[in-house]
Image (cartoon, rainbow, N blue to C red):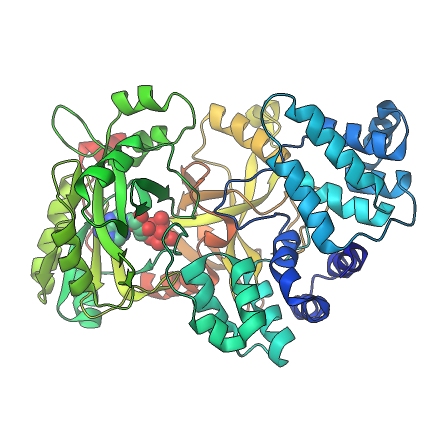
Length: 587
Ligand code: ATP
């Protein structure tokens, strides 16, 4: 397929905000494609060349893009920059400066040449990248150049998320969306939509069932539901395993001989950040190949006590890693096992996975295995919970003994119970920022005074507003926030956002913050869960408790269904409020 054809579909996608229409357009595009182009098309639709968990960036900033476009269009860079000042989008500048006909490159040709741009590194690479990009743009029409530049600058905004692509794949192949669950299962295990699409296109459903856990490729993590009390948990699970809930970084560790990789909650490669986890895995984890999960958490070297998340988070940095390791060493508390030497453990029950974990890890006080209480008594569970909270931990996670590891799924196989204080929701909410207001009074000096936040609905692949938030950030955080949001500012409401109120500045839904609120109320202002009575849901007294969560994609935010469930649960809240310990108050 020609790149011009792909771009034609991009244009159609940009013109609609209707989910069904988007699925239809994408399905039409996929139907026209050849099997070998499938993966490339999927990545390009998402503005990238490889799955999200692979580190590959174009390394092209605006100045480089302007230079390349000027070269391709044979005009001075100053003219290109002047046009950009008028239009605010290098994509639009491309349509004004490149010819109306290109050389008719295929998708594969464009993809391969983009890969060349992205992988050019080392001395002199900036000039080389610019030349490669200029040569590519020189072969394209204005319309093709528009989307190509948006892709390399990270500004392709077609408004399609993973669920829309999964629906479109099913629709394209069999004419309806009924294979979405099978596609989703494969995606949860393989985390690579391009790979899943190619397997599906080549062999249909059989291609999907053939997809299994692969060492080196992250598995989307199993997630917890919420409960209101120990009694609630026992009622749902019966006899279960109760583990402490640690508040650090969730890590999925892949060991393949001496190669060890660590993936974060949202499948980012963290390997360079945690050398002690890599070393401990090489030395203390026996199998040649293994995938295990745990929580990495900083501790006080004098007392061995775990430190709050706000301290652990300082380990998330790319530079000065060894100095930071010395200052704030990590412990790794392992809690699950997914794979050993060619054998998939995700389909084995919890108790079996746990027993094997204990067998293959030579635990010490750095690489540990979570404590687990087996009980069917609510009182025993409550006492365990109280003890953990007393020690400054977040609470507990209870696990169904016979449950398999369900990748990417949030259900009652794992149930969390967190400490909560009188008068607040039993859990925090991860919200996506979709806009901000400039602020009055004191805040006017920062140019930002409050944030418009939203939650996600997977069924519609849209973001719905839930709160306007103006508290919980320090001055420094407001400044950082403004800078981060201005990089994501867009002129209009993004296509995946549903809102009734309009902030001063709209931003691409990308950054996630954690919010605590007193309760969830019905509201005419917000769109989440809005029913025919015209009422949605809103957070009462929202305040930020955790700054931008880099371990979350926008689609990992709290979902509409979770909000509905939390709203129902608050009516029957029975957990007694725990008094915060000193450590928690400081945190
Ligand atoms: P999410 O469920 O989306 O990950 P979250 O990051 O807000 O949300 P919680 O839902 O509060 O986290 O709790 C789940 C997280 O708790 C896990 O992702 C994991 O990082 C952490 N965790 C800590 N201890 C355990 C444990 N023993 N078993 C499972 N998860 C644990």
